[in-house]
Amino acid sequence: MDTFNVFDVSAALIERINRDYAEDVAIAAYYGSYLDGTASERSDLDFFFIPANPDGYKAGLTFILNGISFDFWPIDWERAERMSKLEDGQAGILADCKLLYVRSDEDLDRFNDLKHRLKDIRAFEGEEAFLLRADQVLSGVYPLLHELNQAGSGRPLSFYRLQAFEVMMPVFEAIALLNRTYLRKGWGRNLTQLYDLPIRPANLEAAVNTILRSPDVPEAAAALVRLVDATVVLVKERRRMLQSPPADEIGRGTGFFEEFKGLLDKLQTACERGDYELAFFTAAHAESQLNGFLVYMETGQWGTGAQGAEEGRRIAEQAKLPALMPLLDPASLIPLQSAAHWLEISLERYLRAKGVEIRKFGTVEEFRGYLLGPEA
Figure 1 (cartoon, rainbow, N blue to C red):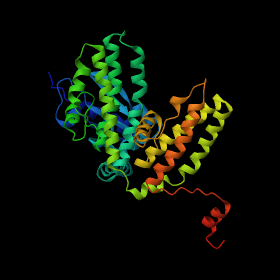
Figure 2 (figure 1 turned 90 degrees about the horizontal axis):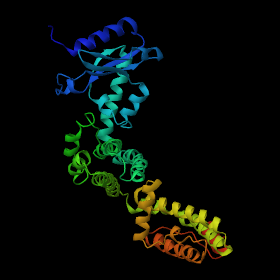
Figure 3 (figure 1 turned 90 degrees about the vertical axis):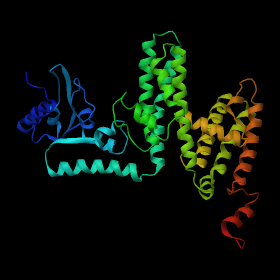
Figure 4 (figure 1 turned 135 degrees about the vertical axis):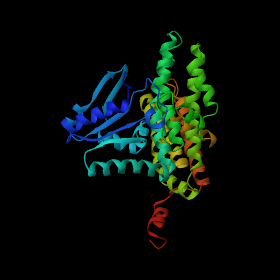
């Protein structure tokens, strides 16, 4: 019996491209176990192609040969572009592949440009770009954790393990981004790389082992939450290390208080009139704006979503700035009105202590003097 060679399979596919899709396929390449030397007797050849036009997609093919499953699958140029910017968790496919077919010199130049761009991003892009991408990746985790929490512990263990897989994929990608790199192997085979990365959550390996192996649903779910929380904390810590100098903080703070005071005035008026609906929305708007601004003051990135609210509240508590939403009470708006008044006073003190100028005038003459000079 002839020895089976997976590269004979790729040769047949490339022969078909040359015959039927020579102008429709731009690039074909392979990656994975046969490139890094970890292939087994059951390994397929991981290969992909980039269509040059819509007809090129017809070259795609899934099949089983010699008992091995193969998938010759398309990646469009747009996805390759995202990979080159580390905006796709499968960037390793682009970075670590070997070409099997090239339609033209122009296609080769375009493909090599993407690979070089990926290398340049890892080498030269500012760390903030990677932290921002890690934030974006992690934001998709919270709906999944919410589903797990809603499910309680009454579902089969298989349900939680499937959900854990959906959570761990973005978490692992975020950890790689914190290290300004990408995952070089597929899911499951990337753990060694993750455990060796210099920036990783404490007890990463222990948490993953618990998630993968524990038969106890609450224990595995708790380990998953700890893994997510620890990764989020890492992103925050890295961002704090990149804080801009005080001069930038002063610039970021300029003008916020003067505008924010209008919200607090509106809130106090709503409280005086007993208008709970207006007080509710105004308090929520004010607290959301304050949280986002405090994160912006500290990091240069406006805080958004649940993570931004949590981080902004942390900063506010350190600065002793009162919260508004806990004081919403349809029966009495007096405590909320008092908190709004105290927030105005304490926020002004906080910003002035940081060197932020507050443009606040008692008279028109005083304002004219500021605006037009002492001789106006």
